[in-house]
Length: 380
Image 1 (cartoon, rainbow, N blue to C red):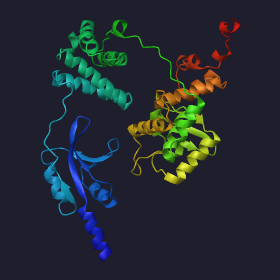
Image 2 (image 1 turned 120 degrees about the horizontal axis):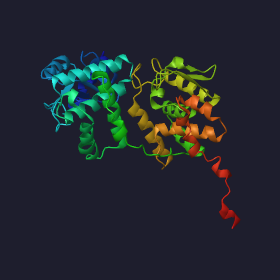
Image 3 (image 1 turned 180 degrees about the vertical axis):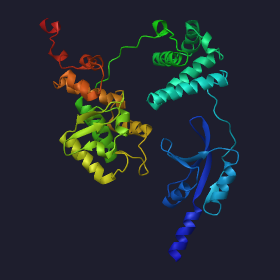
Image 4 (image 1 turned 180 degrees about the horizontal axis):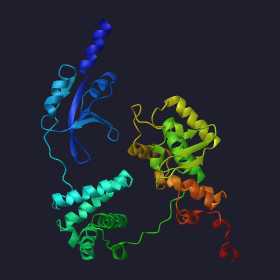
């Protein structure tokens, strides 16, 4: 009885700190506290409370009456500190531009619905919708039927170039505006003929196999080591790793199934024996349920930001100074395959490239042929 009372007292002494925050552009109240299982279970029962895997904090929408509801719900159950909480307004998006009119906002929402019905990815839908909105807001809600190439010239000069936005952003807006006018106005703006910038031709940064090994083996955490190893060993994109489910790993056949990746395509890639053994050890240790790599809570997908941090920690611990990203591990997989004699057509299939031209970039970074070239300097 004494132990139970003492445990209950310690639980009551725990304090939730309410702080301001944002989820996207919407204001939220963050519920911050050191991890405690009982307290975590209590917070889960609040109806509007959601876990934010990126910021690793519980949040609720910040409305006028939300604070009173929170106080009423947690009163007498746990200590509360709301001294740091203040009223706020939503973050404005490009506040120097006028908001969309209801008519144009309606058109853009219909455009969004059309893209979703066409099964565009959610990232593409969000990007295209925001790009079109900024373009039209810059034109101060000019009627859609009156917009022409001259308007895009003005937007390109006075918005994109003036703000020193990179070429990929300009290409993104070109794609979004073209598709929007084809869908909503049934007409084509030939803006790409004039305003699609040249893409810089840069080669992927290549690591030696020794450098890759140092990055993959530096983590003591088996989950972190398994994630980075999968990216390199199978040439996966970040989203492909995060979307894996336990059923996709066929350890008996040594096959990994990658479902509905870029271009809505499935593909298979082989799993080598050493990787299979590592993944088995991980599975036994972590027992994933819904996703093959899960966050702190069961059934919660591991976040892209956390995976990026895993790589950053590995680079810091290993002392690798070269610029390395998760996608560059995929590039290194392809380059090392080519250098070991794998046919380019197989590499194209393993990476899930639609065109062989995309895969051919690795012929420019492979050192296998270059090392066989004899410099005339040797004959001097």
